Image (cartoon, rainbow, N blue to C red; front, side, top):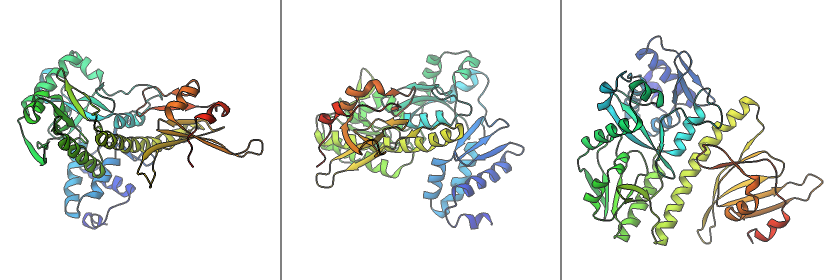
Length: 405
């Protein structure tokens, strides 16, 4: 099949991976590249130490027009070529940048790291930022953006604070006020350089654009939205726009609304009930994507190591009559389970000949207050997961159960 025949229709995931391998062989002759079908990733190098996850790349490729797929493939292959991080901090300093990323994506990458023991922190240099976002330092080379770990800082002989300060200086130098009004009272950054969301770290910028009480959102990597906290309709429009972006984009960062306190972005929950519900719905959507991607990977890891653990599904349910939305997971008696945190949990006792089938649905807070001693949190996991091996006595829980009609 010729290259042009290939671009006439979206390829299967396996064919897309093979095309990338062929292109990499042209650009990086002699480099070992293996396709891990189960993880949908490429393992580059003799020991597979350079991992290229293909899920987002494949989604973007399929979404591109036929005319743009060749260019998308060329950009992808170029980004896979190691640019080589300089050995000295003096050489690297001008290329360091801060990058805000979704914590769910960071957890996914941690799970995919070769030889990484379950329950251990990631080898990436990841700094806490907010409830659902993390801050990374990256080296922005001519052809690729590369993350690195604490070992790189040790090699350079600098502290984390020194490296972060250099990255922030570079971000400020690369930033001029460049915004577009995308709705009444809503402004969107228009840099298009992969660091739009990172400019949330520049509070002076937000104040210049949105006044004394700015609110901000970073629904994906390429978006910074600003509105005045004094403009209720503007904030509503900003949250609605963030939802539309989330519906279309494959690289989410944060579902939160941020305000600035002492020069730092912090989560903000306004009094407006409409905005609060819209933010909760966006949060469920982001968590659904994170849980689903991780479930697939964890199922494969458990199958490989022979672990008989069920990774419960995070479901989003909607009551048609009222429009009420909530998340739901199932905890079944006799099943070793990894349970996501959801608005509600369905406790299920199957009919095994000894016990009668029973189903109770409880709000999370009520369940955790009564059964938290049976729920062991998974270390370093985001979103939250709990290992449950023993099943609770349902007798004291029945009065707490929701009446589902």
